[in-house]
Length: 568
Image (cartoon, rainbow, N blue to C red):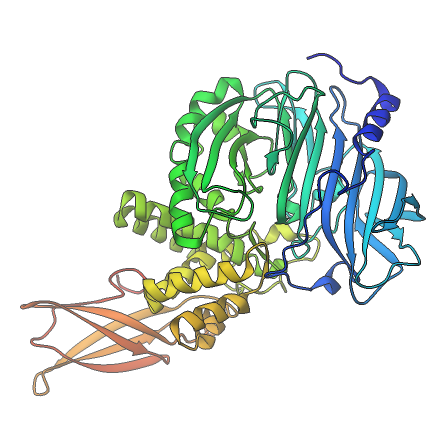
């Protein structure tokens, strides 16, 4: 690799050239997508909503110092404030300019402190106006932009933003409730390729080397800051499929979704094998939930602290897992499902994280039901149930942040958000039936596409599709902790020709007493007989007409319910 720009002065000159054209003057800044946007600004940036980010950055060939310019399009919303508070941690803003739409940029007063950048709003700005804020900044990122040698010993630079670590490399309202469109202009050392969200701008192919050395890409629909990324190193790039049938979406003109993998050269063969069914996953999910929401999907070997990270259109995976051949297809399916749930439909607040992770867990497993059969699917469901029941978070509810410190969002990456969240969806499917369940999920996805949602929004969509009141279900399974532990016994009433079934709930006293319709299977000399019974209370006694005394009774034989059964 050759040196591309020596020193900070040259880097500043480059960045000045990158941002010379006003935001929107050449590219046509898109209007925000209205459907599903939740005005929950008061929780994180009262008075403002970022609509668009344009990030111009020169990646260093050596060292870790970066210089960049971010240009933000920001809506002024009620209540109007005189100061825009942005998240920017560890980097120094060197100049800030601001203007209302159509006016010339002029220097704006600003200050930094406590991981924030405070920018004075032009006095003439009114509620309903759109501001253009241009921020030049520099420094060595403490986190968020990982600059180091990769697992194969080559230098690499990768963004790794989740949950609120975008602030370590660009100024933002770093919260999932404030989604925005984004474009990147990245100058990388010669010999590197750059992957980012969205499609390349001004290039015929995703891998085309730009003549001026600047890799440009753009996402035309709003996405969360935690999924806005770039990655740069010497990649070997392969095509999984040039055209996964993802359905027509606002982000692209055709139903073709190009699917690629970006791996270190030594690991390209492993990557090709791991991602061989990635196009098939897109096609399955598109048939269930609606068109693939973005322009393309790249599967990327990267520096990330996670096994997989669902960055929009560019999923990043653990470099070690790919290098060692231990990245499994379950992770690929999970992260692909996130492109809909988490990325396109994003939780409005962190305590609803299960709407992202629980969905990806369940629908990640469900791909294998379609592709490999119900036996494989049930194995995955049982594994998820065991993982949750043996975890240390069973005394917490899914939607409950009381035990999670506000400065430790990583603590939400637990078995409640993942396994129990996924199993709640499985139980809803069993309760409502496939037709009403998938219609409700599709309704929820359509209603909140490219916006935000909370648990109440999911419940509303499922109630509308099924015609059932699900308040009790959500209260006991989502807003309360734990799971039921059943003990089942039976006797035979010969005169009435009935089995007398006794069902006790023996879970912790602090957990709910669950009320659920449960299927029971009775083994008789004439064969098996199934009955669905409403079970509630600590001790329920139910009579069941049968042709003969049962020799055995199984509770929930098809495994729809999250539970333990004593003696089984």
